[in-house]
Each structure stands twice: as C-alpha cells, then as structure tokens.
Length: 640
Ligand code: MIC
Ligand code: SF4
Image (cartoon, rainbow, N blue to C red):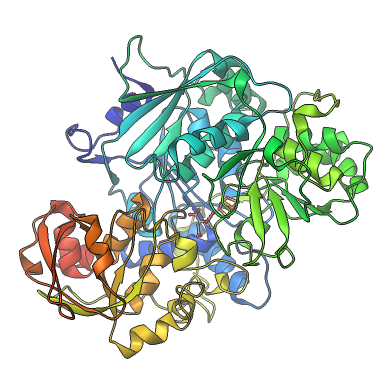
C-alpha cells in the first residue's frame, strides 16, 4: 500500500529502494532550467561532452533576467537559445512566461519526474508530478542521463478538510502550514495533499501550495491526479497526458497534518521570513505603499481574475503603486480577450512583462521604509532591492483589496462577487521552439560576458583556514549570492559575481577571502535556505572557501556545496558554535580518509578548543569532494 509519492518514486528508482533518509537514485523524465541558472547548467552539460539530452523532455526558459540594461542578459539569452537548439532542448523565449507557470500549463504530467534548476520546480506537483528543485549542475547531470539522488523522503500527509470561506485562498493554506512548521520544518520530507477539501481546489490553487512548499524546505509537494487535474489538462488541450493517480486505500504516512479549510482566515507572511505569519485582521489598517500581483506563486488565470474582480470599477489609492505581471503569455492573452486587462489598467495598475520581475528584484524596488504587499513566495532581507522596505506575502485577493484601500484590507469582508467566467481553452505554443533537427549545423553563440567555468582544486588532507564570516540561523542564498538587477547579469561571470558575496552581511567579503587565501564559513541552522542557485556555492568556491561549518543545512544548498567541492560539516554539539569567533584559525584533518557520514574534529588554533563535527556527505560524495567537485569527478571517470 503506497502513497502517491512512493508510487512515482518507486517507478523511477535506478537503485534498490533504500531506507528512509538514505540516498535513492531517481530517473528524471523531464528537466527545466531558467536563464539565471541555465547558462551555467548548459555550460556544464557542454563540459560533460553530451551531444543530445537523454531525457523525455527538457525545456529552457527565459524569465528571470529580462531587464536588459547592457548586453549581458541578452547575450545569455542568445547562448541559451542556441545551446538548446543544438542539444535537444525546447526553448521558451523571454515574454512567454515564468518557467513554473508555463511548465504547469504546457508540459507537466501526472506520474512523471521533473528536476529543475529553480527551487520552485515543485509547482508541477499540482498535476501529480514528483518535481524537485536542484542546482544547475544536478540538472545538467539529469539531462546527461545520470538521474538525481535524494535521501528517500519521509511523506507528510496534509489532509485538507472542508471548504475555504469567500476571500480566503490557497495562499492562506500554505501560509498556515508555514506558520505551523517554519522555514525548516519540511527538510527531508514530501508534503502530500489528501482529503475531501481537494475537490474544491483548482490546479492553480494547488500550484500555489506546491510552489510555496519550497519555503518549508521540503523536498517537494504533491497532489493526486484526479478529475480536477483532468479538467485542467483538457483546457490545455492535452487530456491525453492525464492518468489517475491516488494513494492506495490505507497507505501509510510518516506524519499527518490536518487543516480545516473553513477555519482559515486571510493571512500574510511578515518581513523578513515566509514563516512569520500573521492574520490580516492583526495588520488591518496599516498603510501600504506598493502592491505586486504575479510571480510563479500566484500568476495563473484564476489568480489574475480574482484580483481583477476586486479591482473592477475601482481605482487604487493615490499613494499605492500596483504592478501586475501575468504568469504566462497564454494567461495575458486570456486577460486581454475577456477585458480583465482593461480592468487592471483602468484601476491604475502598471502592467509588467510575463516574467519574475519584482520577485527577484528586477526593478520595482519599493521606496525607503516602504510597505510592499506581494503575492510572491519570498520576502528575504534585501531581496526586493530596498533593504529598509518591509515585504509581506499575501494572496491576490488581499493584494487587490489592499491596493484599493491603501491599507492592509481583509478580502473576506468585501461585498464583491468572486464569480468569473471559466477559463477559456486557449493554447499558444508559438514562443516555444523545438530543438533543431540538424544539431550539427547549430553554432553556439557566446557573448563576452560568458566566462569559462571556474574549477576547484582537488581536496587536500588538511584544511587550515580562518573563519572568514560567522553567521546566524536561516541564512538564505539571497544573503550568500544576492539577486537583483545589478548583480544578476553576472550569473555567467563568476569573478564579477564573487564581488557581491555576502554584500548585505559583511562589506568586502571577497577581499577578506583574498587576503586570507580563502577561508571557512561558520553558520547557524538551515544554512543556505531559499533558492537553488548554485552560485551560492560556486562564488564562495571561487573565493577559496573550503568548508562550511553549520548547525544544519538546507537541502539544495547542501548538494550544491558538495558539487563544487566544499566540505559541509555540522556541529555535534550546537553550543560549540558560540565559542568560535570570526578570524579564528580552524583546522580539519584526515580528509583523504573520508568515507561518508564521518565524525571529524575541528581544532580551533586560536583557542585550542576541539569541536566534534559530522560530515554531511554519503559515500558517493567522497570521490566528488576529493576531486574538487562534480565536474572534476566526471572528467576523472571519463579519463579512467
Ligand atoms: C528565486 O526565487 O530565488 C530564484 C531566483 O528563482 C532562484 C533561482 C535563481 O537564483 O536563479 C530559485 O528559486 O531557485
Ligand atoms: Fe521567478 Fe520569483 Fe518564482 Fe523565483 S520565486 S522563479 S524569481 S517568480
């Protein structure tokens, strides 16, 4: 008797089914990349010497770096289009939509596995796929046919009972889960949704939940594939992709979480963490400066229509700036045709491209100390581009109601009809290009901003380095390798990117590393939470970081550190964290004898103290670390 997660995983195992928590190698049917991580991923694919991808389907999306101030992003786009054509990858051009939204509409399939170089890849779990976010190198490996290894997960049943009240939406469900479980409560787990509440949750609502499951630190989230999924696929004119997929009667789960939908109220995640959840009632009346509707979390047809219904016939408050970015060109066209776009414009909205936009700090930074309500999934410090701003994560209904009121407003108190016409069955793939039938004739275009991949040196038996930075709990990849319009153009230029590492934590961190010939990072719990960007490992590697000593790690970042040859270790006694100071010299020995799950000693040369630590690696990671990272390891294997 299996749950949905186990059914799909077990059908895709490339090794025996392991104990929970032990590594399982999974065949990946589909891959996706986006431009901010894709350039690196395809350069890695090229470095592996792969001619044609080995997956059923691989898609390259351009949706993040679309603010083209300077040639850099446009160069990346041209590279991505040419490399996709050559290696058997579909290409979704800038303007076609946000990767997760377009993938959900056009490609996600029940029962399939998907790995994507973006942490919100689990969005496709709304259609019953096992969809996992990973670093670009792991996606490149999956395209090369190596599969992907994850610790065989625990499965949490999230039983949804009853029905949502008017004005309350899927965003409020996932915020409730974040409130209960926190941003590290999902590590090593899959959240599988069940219960009679599912029948009233559309695929768009499900997608908001699976998308933001990433903020729990979860491996992924999944819904069964039922009649609701079938209807969605039918409207996308691909009903043939539907299969029924449900848990066996009596299937077991490791944990159960029950949510009574009828008891939920509109909520917001307060600055600067998606789990700092309060009800809108507590915030009602506080002034709002900016409202942004869109992002891969809430930009489907239904999200847009719910906001449009509230904005119909109204204008936004004079001090509010409202932006609207539909998730895909298909959605935008539907809004044009049914008049909702006109509603937005008449209400005073600034219509943005169908891209990530403000979510990743690509423009629309709020004013100093501004209050910004966003239908997005992350409100980490500095991510909006304005460090002093307070970013709150809310549903489209709360966003629209607050834009009109100019203050936090509770949409469940509005007397507005939420009825809107059913989604038309319009499909448009004209901006998705199939790979070339003559790949040998395709020339890859490489602009001057695309620099060669930096490589690490093989590991040495002893690491003797200073603690170049000491950090608190829940450090995000936005702290390590910040995003935003200024930095993102350097995603394929690591030397330049490395100048921005920890720019909001410690000025000139790169110079400290250079002056000390690299170093070791010391951190608290859940180090590296958030995005999948491997740049948060690659840029520190470039600066000579050899190890990260933390209380615990986030899943994707841990894998990225290993991929780039950085040793991840955790304190056996978390209290030892307190006795390390910045610039203490730390010594870690016997690294040539690593076996996986090793117990090691970190010596503090400044104080003479010794700290027992555990290496967060499996046996399979040892040759990778010894080689100085995955690419070196693959090359060593190819030579052998
Ligand atoms: C994000 O939401 O943080 C991003 C930008 O989409 C990242 C990927 C990246 O940094 O390029 C993610 O979620 O993985
Ligand atoms: Fe883009 Fe934001 Fe979604 Fe990341 S979270 S994929 S930046 S819309």
